[in-house]
Image (cartoon, rainbow, N blue to C red; front, side):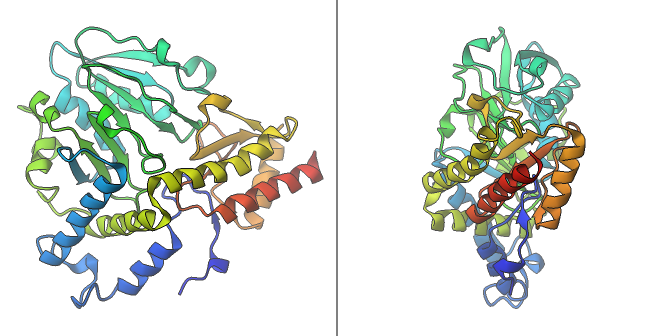
Amino acid sequence: MLKQAQRAYNFNAGPSALPLAVLEKAQRELVDFQGTGMSVMELSHRSAAYEQVHNQAIASLKELMNIPEEYHVLFLQGGASTQFAMIPLNFLSQGKKAGYIMTGSWSEKALKEAKMVGDTYTVASTKETNYNRIPALDELVYEENTAYVHLTSNNTIFGTEWSEFPDTGDIPLIADMSSDILSYGFDVSKFALIYAGAQKNLGPSGVTVVILRPDMLERANTNNVPTMLRYDTHVKNNSLYNTPPTFGIYMLGLVLEWVKEQGGLAAIENMNKEKAALIYDVIDQSGGFYKGHAQKDSRSLMNITFRLASEDLEKQFLAEAKQAGFVGLNGHRSVGGCRASTYNAVPYESCKALSEFMIEFQRKNG
């Protein structure tokens, strides 16, 4: 059995930390799932035993996120990166334009895929300040004949997060929520489509969750879209058109049960605020020794990005942190610096330990 003392201080950006209780339950059930004499990985995806796992995961997600009953919940594959293409293939028809709000590398990648399919435009961008903030709502400008507006709710690389979502009126609003889904409560009905790779807050890598408003299927123009890239294919088959990532979905279901045991999204949100504050407070009180990348009103609760005075000092910080048992504190390769990803399953104790390490490192090197 895994012991907490053996666990790393895991701040990986994804795949990221999973709750220890979830890992231990999966460990207990690995060889014999509920008396079937088989692992979940061995069950037929058409079996009653797996169907229960699949449908319970959908029901749990709907319950936790208060998803309107009519919305579809899909478990797909290919990550958010496949959704970058799948969304315009389904919804960007001729004579329409797709609007993208540019807040980082992942929105850039989403826009790049959409440009291959049809006409696009930029609703707003903060690239000129190296994506250190989220655009103000009054900066968003929508054009006529907009098929949908796309945003990235949390930017893992730059450490920014939307605190208030725009009202796009009759224009469908689509969000990539890969790195902050299930970390706080919000009104799902504002969105026509939400998608998220599971490997941050939902479970292991390999599952992509899609939450879809049903009227979007009526808007879809799929005459020339391959079968596997059509949302209606997966809606009609309850995400079982082909063999789904069954073990990943099972793990996702266990994570959702764990979130319920913590008290639901309200309790999780409070925990995340407390965890992030431990680290942000050290940055803010360091007198400039640590410099946060994101503007304060755009800070992410999931990804805390910061720099030190020089690259040499950053290398020293990261090397000493690794020796002390901290994992995943390197900034993304495209921007450098440091990053602590404090997803739901990262314990308060890990964030407390990091804050204490940062204070001591400054004391010795400041």
